[in-house]
Amino acid sequence: MKRNLTNLFTVLGGLFLSSLAFAQEGTAAATTMGGGGLVAVGSALAIGLAALGGTMGQGRAAGAALSGIARNPTAADKVFTPMIIALALIEFQAIMGFIIAYILSGKV
Picture 1 (cartoon, rainbow, N blue to C red):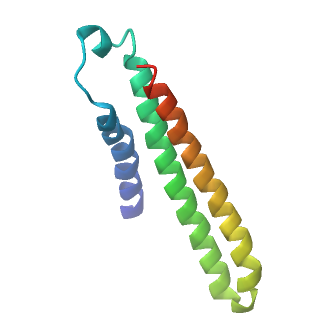
Picture 2 (picture 1 turned 90 degrees about the vertical axis):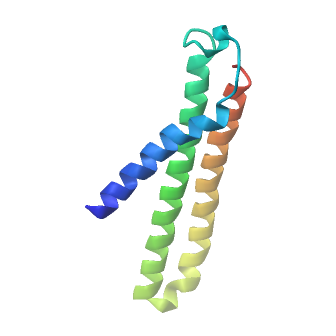
Picture 3 (picture 1 turned 45 degrees about the horizontal axis):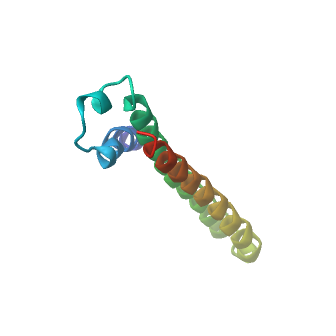
């Protein structure tokens, strides 16, 4: 239960606090939801979900690899290289989310 509550706070924090990075003063037309408001919300969601998915994926991958090494220490060499490749791919997906959010924030 405590882990689910922690995950819930992580999701909510990532979704709502990441939009503060794009908070800035502007004209009344730019702050309405008609023009660029939805683009700003979309870029904030892209950053939040990329950070959330990347950290959760890396945590699970590292945990599974360490669990496998703990069960069979002789397989550490066989587990280490695929784990590093998987972590690099997960990090790439998170970086792509940041890039998409940066491109979207330029359209506001």
